[in-house]
Picture 1: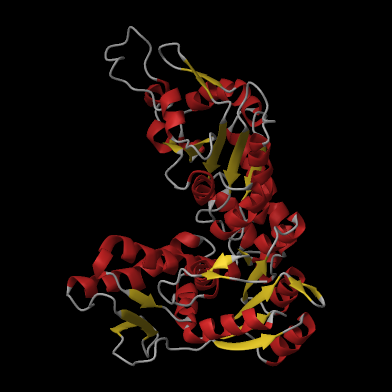
Picture 2: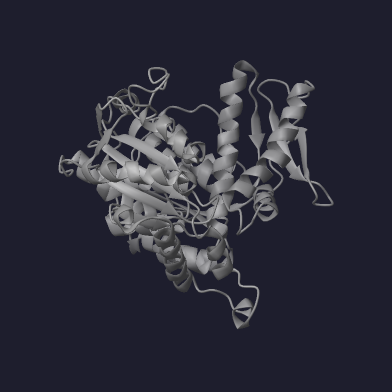
Length: 470
């Protein structure tokens, strides 16, 4: 099981732009790990609301990855398959006496709950996806499950949910939320919605829709109703980095000895973000954009035999900016079509020089500062694309510097290096701003993975030697 002192940072790196969700979820897992979960009821019951593409289902997958090592280590019930009353019988199985009741295997059994746990963690995750699509009888069946942690199957056997966190996702109120965020008529259509006002409005809209759909006794059994916020530019930029990293991993896993690397410079990532940005569809449209303009052309090149093993595919932008230009790098050809700037802030000269050489080899123009005040002066003169800083600086905390630079230069990505777990307040600040946390001591390979995902550059290859840091 993942250590709870780092669970918040792990989830923050996987679930982008939703710090309030992480803040509500981590204490529930900590309570289970401490052995203080309530008796005779689930460990937690969460209803996840918000516009499509904001990360509701991804939250449960990320928690499964953090606790069990795989996003598939959860039991998912697609409620769209239970829209008719008679279909709900598939959930608990038909009672004896009905024709074919022995062939109707329940979707929720004790064996299936146990199958999604691991030796690392005995906590089961159950997801009821798009709960509003299910027939009304499903919510009635779930009343006992949510209240007492017991589900009676058709053959009268009982399934215990005491070691389970139950998640329910819903798009209830999504259209009303979009109208609140992007009004088209009246005086509000010419006014920008303040972030604090938007949060309160979305929560009120979501709860109003929930109360109209579900009975009071059902709503009263939910521990937390979490409303997801639309993704901002910084969050979408981080998702582009995740998608590019995932694509590179997919190439290595699928092609094996025929694998190659893909160099996606900062300018290209910004182009993908601008091309795929949508308040209405969130990250889903951005993922489709990466798939259409990057993954599919790569597949065409591989199918035609144009990509030799172990080569590097360079990605640029066509002159008309309508599509991307892909080509195989020739021997001696410089990789990357842009040279972003990294501001490195660390008082350890030896470590700073090592990271400077490492990032320069990656194609970064590196500027080094030893203190927070020096870093602020440098950032004012030359806006960096990324900042990498130590958590403890001679004249202040690195997280405070990351917050200041993030507020003054939106879109700048940051990595904080630390020897000890950050305090909860700093962890939440990092999650809110999308700041990655790199725990010392770390391997070079691990450092490059975090830097590549956060700052958007290609990896240096296989470097597994431990990096000793003071």
